[in-house]
Length: 72
Image (tube, rainbow, N blue to C red; front, side, top):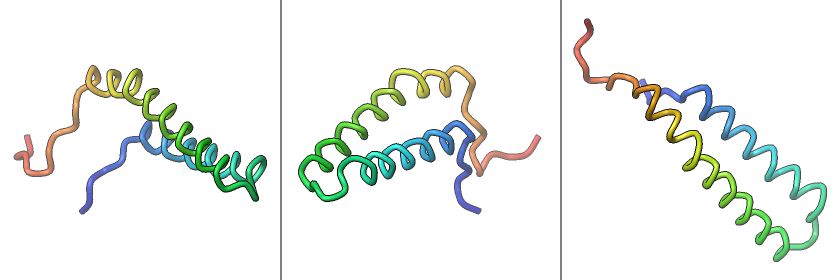
């Protein structure tokens, strides 16, 4: 079985995908360079949000046991 995805990671990935595709389609459909710059900026904003808030919250809540850990 593959690694499990946490619900907050799934929400974050879905929101990221929705923002990137929505902005591309709505505003920058035929403008390559503007679209590229905005997409890079969006990645940086989501990355900063993850590093500042979600990563700290995930570390505080504890990490799930590894797949190789013996059951209790």
